[in-house]
Image (cartoon, rainbow, N blue to C red; front, side, top):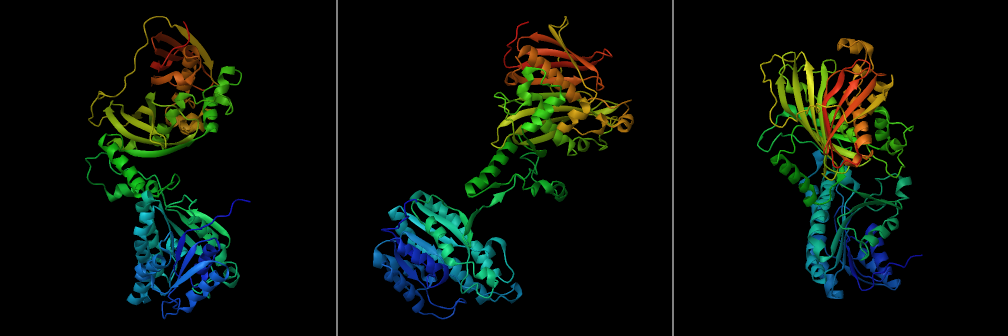
Length: 595
């Protein structure tokens, strides 16, 4: 059994210690060597009357068990007098349990000023005044342990307890600040949220519950929070019937409502359109200090100044199963031993094929109206959009699972007559704010042209680069499966164009076509195999133009030209002789294969 926790040499002040929880705290501290100040005004639970008997009885109990204790009969509103009792009798104060409380339950409509003021005076002001009085002694000692007593009514609300709930939640705010201000002087402040049978809860709780909510089952939790070995500071601990847990304030990721730091207003209509992201708590994280709470907002503002944020924001989750499914979707196979690192999560070199990280940007585009909102007509839907070009650049190590945030916005719009070309930029970050990848997608929207727009791209649209005018340095063939599109779409691009014959006909195709990004995946596998020893870490960037459709089951020929660390390539459909991908290149960090 572990060594007994002791409080020898410590002085504990427990307010409202004449009965219930306070009595149990005082008895436990006294039995473990602390000198105890038993404070209790001795009034009713409604804050009426006064009596010395309640405190005296508890003092006698502590002394009868061999402990040391004195009584204090002051109201906690006179906190200085309560602490003075400790200093006068024992010369110091190490532990302060703010436990005193009263109830004056009324519905909101019937709560009087007196009901409100008395409850707040005892619970909130009393805890503040006792803490304030103990503060200079604890600071001088460079040691202190303070407990604020909140309630389920404060944390969650309760009918008929507006005054009590407000005071109890006020104690949480008070504790937050006390914890921050006291930390440098080893003064810890924590919140206990107890549910216990007491004279205040008798008649309110059902008998079966009342009989199990023994105050002595909560006392050890408070005692540990007050021990010098406990490192918690600023925690909220809920406890009842021999059970305890920690509560935390959490905050969702939220979403940016401005496109730049210069934008001073936002519309209620836009707030409505992104409200689901504002209220999404799927990726909520604890926030326990104002410095950390405001830190994220400062980061958002800095990113707005630098143009890093603005536009549409989306969260993307993935794991090893998703990476394996993607690898299968672009033709990786266990027949090739070099592909096993992409197909087996326990492989010592398990890795993501880099082009998987087009997916966060693609999902953002598919689940938002990013492209449609960029067009005067707003006419962009799955049956009239084609993937024109794609650029992907890797900026940091790619994790094999995680939750990523992608921020995307329209970068350029061009009028091509028969359609519109919309260029989007997307930056993807991990939870720590590391920029992992940048994507630039060019989407051709059929029938959305002739709106009087410009014809040429602005600076910053990444161009394709024609292949060298010589025979390829190397060539690799891959035959796709007739089920290739059906398999690849499970990675996220569920456009019916790739599986539904009727939908394909509406889009102008005789049969469902393979995803352009699937053909890209096959091409990248070829480049990595030929020039990077199949090591995805050597991949830096890729740029392609999708020139012609591929039908599932057709054969792809990837022709490659090596020029320093840049590998140019084209991808041709063997059965038709048409280039499916043109002007493509991959930039590698290093080339490990010889020609």
